[in-house]
Image (cartoon, rainbow, N blue to C red; front, side, top):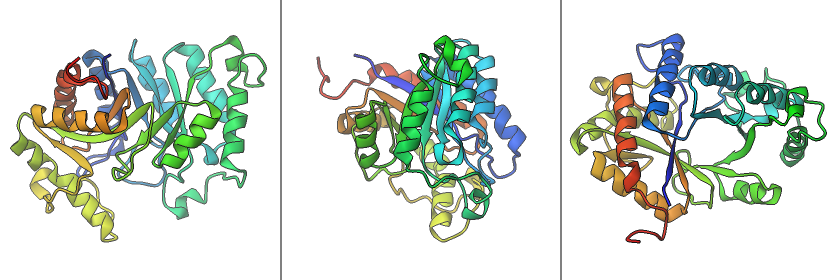
Length: 302
């Protein structure tokens, strides 16, 4: 009956920090997430985005899996058009052989960065569905040239998307679907997992103050300016645009329950766009503390 809680971490490079610091914070956060009982921890693929240090999911997943012992670790996700399916199967098959039962392979089709950078990647004009079906076949231990998978150690395959249409493709192919609600909060899709942006603090006022930086960054992006996530002291936008769930524990519990009631998802994946790492740790601690109060859609009061 319980709701699973998981973590999506972009390894954010915030104003005043470096990619190295961002990756060290990710390593620290995955250990905390395991300690707090989160179910899985995903890192995405981005390219040429100076505010995101997560560019090579397979490499980062290898490190995160090595420093933890229980939590599932994976990609959220690998952008399949950037890679030959065989390479993806070999990389994540190797990870799964080293950490059996703990590796997730989430895949998507977004470019993952500006056109000037993405053009340097190996791209393909093959239909996305064709690529997915090839990857599915390569992850079949019974008959695959992806040698690490042959021992029956394939990762768990997930399809990621931010539109209801992708959920239909996932259903047709029999792949679990993760809906990126943090990218498209206006849409609703039936999914096995829903990701949401959350800024939790000890009370509503502090949470609203901590939300200033991400609201400033979103506004700047809308105005055509790309900035690193500023500190709360330097934030200039404080209007609520609905993209991020903000509040103290009681407020966040209510807002997360509303997402569950709307989507009927059995799992929530939390991303917390906060400037200070200590505040990000605290946000996840508070989310974990309210996890037991969350109920699947249609079971409240049972």
